[in-house]
Image 1 (cartoon, one colour):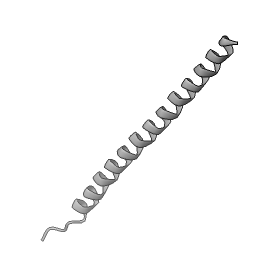
Image 2 (cartoon, rainbow, N blue to C red; image 1 turned 90 degrees about the horizontal axis):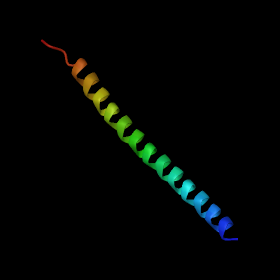
Image 3 (cartoon, rainbow, N blue to C red; image 1 turned 180 degrees about the vertical axis):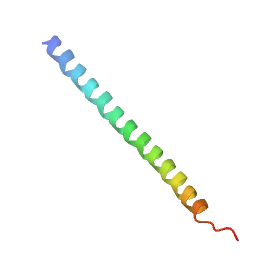
Image 4 (cartoon, rainbow, N blue to C red; image 1 turned 90 degrees about the vertical axis):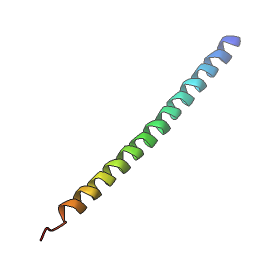
Length: 52
């Protein structure tokens, strides 16, 4: 009976680690995409400046 309890506890811990990693990866990707978008905006703004 105790073995079954440990088995379910192990499954729950693995699920929480998996979900935590998914959330961490999503936030990391959002931050990277935001920084890349900022770089692109700056690049296009500088590219469109016309020199007289």
